[in-house]
Length: 481
Ligand code: NAD
Ligand code: 6OD
Image (cartoon, rainbow, N blue to C red; front, side, top):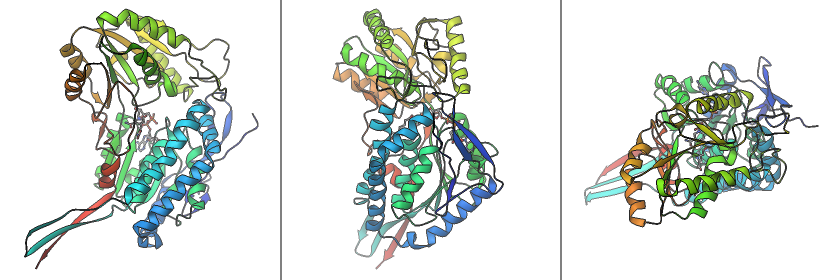
């Protein structure tokens, strides 16, 4: 394919390469071809970006009124939409996900992240209290300062903007470190940021890796006041330790091993269509993916038959073919990691559909959507996050039993409950240990709601008022009259 897109850092409003000229190659996971090179940032680039962000806090950005911020944030959203085909193309080339998904979900949602927080900012207030006529208390909000944003590769622009929009709305400046595997849409976003008229230094983007690279140097930098991180639980622990030295504020959205609980009174047509999405959309590379599917015994065989049938109909292949449902996994290493779990599944359970490279596809990191049964609850395939198009289906008998099994996990990000019994839906939802519970649906979002996980799935919540709180400092002022 005749395509190249090189990714430079964006520091203080300028696109630059690393001082030492270091670069790495960006690979298209669907074709294994080179997409271009990426500047590899180190200590020097992180420091330049942080200093630019620090200066920008005190510059014209610091004087922007709420109305000025709303206008510029709204403009960023508008410009993303104006260039949505370009963004979607880059996102699919970088990730291997279907272009239709990038165009209809990732990119519009990225724009909406800016539009939502621009609108939301209008109604952000603070508290005030009056004890009696002699004392009055009120709080003011200020930016936290320089905020580091570290993101994964599965929903690159969606997740970067989910953090950037509220950070800017609250008047912070940012240094973002996109995932090394998906640097392209962040680079295009930098162009949009410039075109929208955001003052230099307010948004900085430094490419690179995690350990001993841009990611680590960002988390260790003493002038970074907060880190918002989305990624693996293990990485979260490393970042927490590094950030402790300078006592940074942290927000973590981490991994998940999410249960889908399907009671026998559920609407099976709805269940099948949504479970296909929750297991296999975005190649199953979604933190919210339902990867442990508990089905009540009376409908277990019927569910399985229909779920397998529907899975066989999924078209796996070229992300740019409009018929494609499932694209390529992100990298060779990731495909090998996911395949390692399939080896365990073959030994300890039974793969009843998928599990192989799709026939006729010679290049690219593809895997057929896979369903596994007959696994012991303690098997690693049931316990660990696989982050691929792989679902384990397990039967259950009683409500009490399935709640205990769903909660028997280190993770606690999301869960889906399928039932037509409203009382049961509430009862079960109240007992599930996860930050998000969907009833008779999946990934239905309202950006005002608290989003995040408990246990090893995260610390803190983002969305609406929760993002406002994370990205701002409160000072309480007491007046004695
Ligand atoms: P990852 O943790 O390997 O990498 C995420 C980011 O962290 C990358 O930019 C990487 O370069 C950086 N990084 C890695 N090591 C670092 C270090 N020592 N210091 C600083 N930065 C470092 O995750 P991934 O493989 O890119 O993404 C997949 C994971 O993300 C899955 O576990 C998935 O569940 C999780 N995720 C969670 C959510 C959520 O909302 N909870 C959303 C999407 C993805
Ligand atoms: O919808 C969101 O706001 C969000 N953070 C989604 C995360 C999906 C994980 O892969």
